[in-house]
Every structure is written in C-alpha cells, then in structure tokens.
Image (cartoon, rainbow over all chains, first blue to last red; front, top):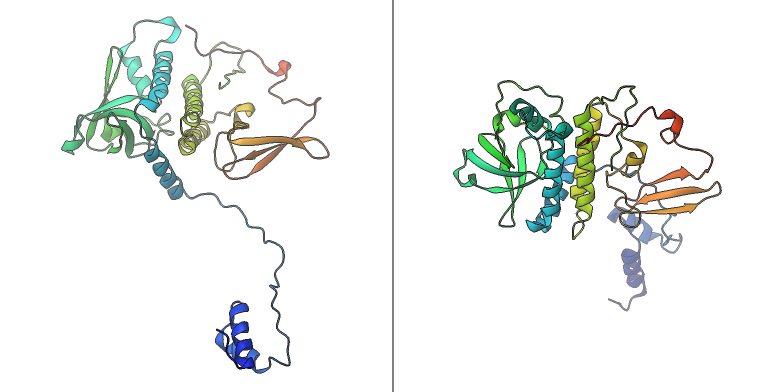
Length: 197
Length: 132
C-alpha cells in the first residue's frame, strides 16, 4: 500500500478517503493539491425527513402469504371455528326460534361472513382438488385460502367448482361461478339465478 | 365488543346484519393477535375488511372502536402488546404509538370534556342484537 514516493501516498489517501469523485475532478484536484485545501468532512449535517409511504397492495399480500405459511397448524384455528358457529347460530335463530325457513337460510348464508367456516370441495375442474376439506382463513375475489387437515395451506379458485358447508342440520352448496365478489362488497350486491341449499 | 346503539325511536334496528358481521370481524382480529406466535398480518386483514365493509354500507364505527385501529397500517392496537401509551407534554396528553409502523396520535387529557357518544342525554335508546 505505502510507496516510498511522498506524492503517490497523498494521491492514494485522497482517492480512498474522499467519497464520490469522478476521474476528471480527481485529476484537477491532484494538480493543485498544494495550493487548495480539500474538505474531508461531509458537508451535510442533520437528517433529511422522509415522508412515510403506505405499503402497496402487492406488498401487503406478500406479507400475508409469508405470515400464513409460518403457522399452518389445523389445531391452532380451533377457537375461530367455535366463534364462527356461535355467530351463525346468532344470525339464524332470530328471537328464540328453533326451526329455520329455507328461504331465510338462503339469504343468511349469502350475506354472512365465511371466515372460519368448515368447507369441502364437491366438484371442480381440477380433479386433485376434490374432496379437500378445511377452514377458510382469508377470502378474496377469486380465491379461498384454506387450512387443511394435513396442516397445509391451499389456495382454491372459486371458478368452475362447487363447495359445500355443513352446519348442524343444514347442508349448503355454493356455486363458485356466481360467487366471485369481494367479501366486503357481497352485502350490497344482488344475485340472479342463484340456488344455495 | 362492538357496540350497537340505535338512535331511532322504535326498537327495530336497521342494517342489523352489518352490525353483526362487524362485531364478528372485530373478534376475529382479536383472535389472530392471541395466536402463538402472534399473527399480525392476519389481524390486519380482518380489520381492513371491517373498515371497507363499514364504508360501503355507510355505517359509522363507534369512536372507542375506531381508536383501537392504527390509522396508517390498520393494526389492532392493544396497549402493552402492539402499542405503547404514555402521558406527557405541557397541556397533558396521552400519546399512543403503534409498534408496527411508528405512527402516533395524541389525545388531550381533560377531565371535564367528554365524547359526544359518552354523554347520557345523547343516547335515545339501546337496542340489543341478540334476544334469545
């Protein structure tokens, strides 16, 4: 590193220490090294405030995916299933009724929240997806995300498949083709030619 | 947990199914944080759907519920677990800082002032959703 000549040592020192110098500027400064002083300190002092940016939707989805894969244990979601059954019972049996009208039940399951329901695939274009069973964790416009009994997480597309929910005495079948709506917008949407139960 | 108050004179509550669904989503967000290990992203997802569902149906969240949700990143704020709350400043105020993203909000500490929703003369009648 150190060379016997005094000038080259100074040159190397300047090259290493001074940050962000282009070659032309370096040559200029080396010529009049002995006439002009060089500032070694950084001129900027004090931090520049940065504005906080919201995460993009794609980044949020990637974070969710990473978080779900870490804990994919079927037994851990037991309280969610219990909570959902209490919620559905509260919606179905209004005013202490024991029997349910079939037309009422159709409307209830259309507008109810499905996070935590136990679901199974009856028919689908993909043959290997049939007969999978599990609880719904998240729901998007075109997908159900499910924790299966084998402690794995699966994405199941709604299109071209038929689902089934069993709750006490009721058996509800859902046609996925008409169900392709975000869960937060499902309440306001109107359905046509739709036959659950 | 979610509070249901109807300001109409009759006992009938409009948009009952919306309130029940909001209540369920709020409970599900609490469940996601109590998991081992803590699942922050899942609880963010539930609160985000709760917010959008209230927006679409033109239903306002109760201010006590609204103050437990981070404005920036939608994380559920529980003091000691996901946020810190301290009393400081010259006109005394509570500062609640989110531990996920670091945003903070100040609330004035004034004993005399009360929220509009907390005053007893503003509540017409209370409607319970589950009569069984």
